Amino acid sequence: MLEELRIQNLGVIADATLPLDSGLTCITGETGAGKTMVVAGLGLLFGGRASRAPLGTEKTLVEGRFAVGEGALELRERAIEAGADLEDGELLLARSVSSEGRSKAWVGGRSAPVGVLSELGELAISVHGQSDQMRLLQPAEQRAALDRFAGADHGKLLDAYRAAYGQLGTCAAELARLRTSAREMAREADMLRLGLDEITAVDPQDGEDAELAEEARRLENAEALRLAAATAHGAISGDPATGEGGATDTVGAAARALEHDAHADPKLAEFAERLAEAGALLAEAAVDLSAYLDDLTADPRRLEEIYQRQAALKTLYRKYAEDLPGVLAWAENATKRLGELDVSDERVAELETQHAELTARAAELATQLRASRRAAAERFSTSVSAELKGLAMPHAAVTAAVEPRPAGRGGVDLAVETAVSGATEDGADEVELLLRPHPGSLPAALHKGASGGELSRVMLAIEVVFAEIGGPPVLVFDEVDAGVGGGAAIEIGRCLAKLARRHQVLVVTHLPQVAAFADRHLVVSKDTSGAVTVSGVRVVDDAERARELARMLAGMPDSHLGVAHAEELLAEAAKMKS
Image 1 (cartoon, rainbow, N blue to C red):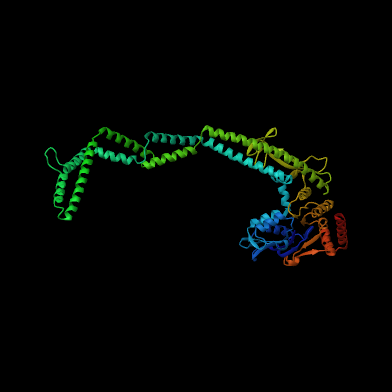
Image 2: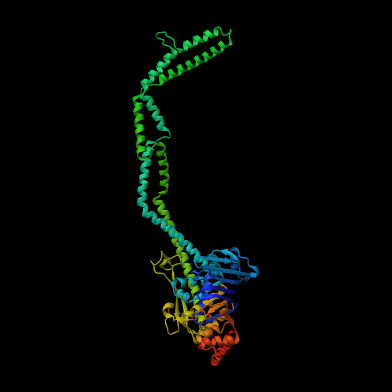
């Protein structure tokens, strides 16, 4: 329950505090006194769009104090989650807007995002004004109202349908993408395959280019290498043809000369050993040079093969990369890309099968959703029509018509029941509220068949029906009785009083017949400066209340006849409430 509301610097309200109570609270006052600013303040408090504070003021401030009982479990949990300390079951909310347009919010004395106020507002309060009546004329709002009335099981069914519809859209988009871009992807895939085929035909090996270059240099310089190796071998081993000795013989002779007298001086033995090692190394080098000379052959055919191989590699470098590692990397990346460019008939067929399955699933859920809506529409129509009988429209009837949406008027066409319907994320149905004011008339859409007064009563009847199935504990109505008078106004007052047995109801009204049913009556008035201050909002009782109703009845609060009429109206309202 909202126990108190304080508003500073909003519209004509400079500083006013509204003491509120359970049951039905009516707010009245002269035109322009700031009654509607109360509703605007509630909208601001619960995350509504904020305008800058008026010039010359520091900020606009709205504060609300709620009593949160154990029954409002979801509201309590969300407030505690936001950091609020619900001391003694009280929840303090605040919203300020500076003259620069900066907005701040507080929940339970702690700073919080404005979005948290919006979430709490959805759980705590429902505000209805003439703009809400206009929204009710829109088909989407009427469908949403019926879905809300249908209950939790219907909500789960709607969620399941929306999930299936979303999956169907994703699958359809992927299938369309494959079909639309198949030509481009196929062209790219063909180019990649040609490149891979060319590289595979050459079959380059890692490090092969360096090995080929080394072998080519050896073959190109075979005679020079042979001469160098033969000269070195002769210098080491000598020339058998002439009997001339080589380095091996010389070193061997030197070693033997030292060994002969090594016993006289150990140093000579050391030199002899070193010369022997040198001789062994020279002999080993001679053997290796001999083997090198045996293997070294001038092979023009092999050299030509190497040239051809290098030419093949250079062709790959020219097309795919600057060097062999780059070519191998290109081939690896091309293989991966081919996997991504799967435009095979198998993939398309797989998606087509999946699309057909999802279409069938969405159609099945849309069929169930339509059946659920029609069942709910029957209950909704009966309940609202029954409430209208108590609002001076005894012969009126409201019908919630659930019809298939024509094919081609949704995101996708689905076979629902026995025909094809255009489906969106909300289903394949069009919902429209029809009003038949009296038995001799034909049902017509609300925006065509309802006057302003009738629309106000239909709106109120719908709110009463919603109140029966739960909803926020606080209901606020801003002049929803516009266009109504006489006996119909009395019935609206009685209906609001009935609604207030289960909810806290705040009503901004200009009708004395409605205000007469209030459990608490607040009057808003401006001072001589044209602003509403603390003293400008007061609770009226007894004689003062009768004078306010007399003012609303005839503009003559001091008229004895007007006051007597007001007292009679209050007495009659009291009888009707009991």
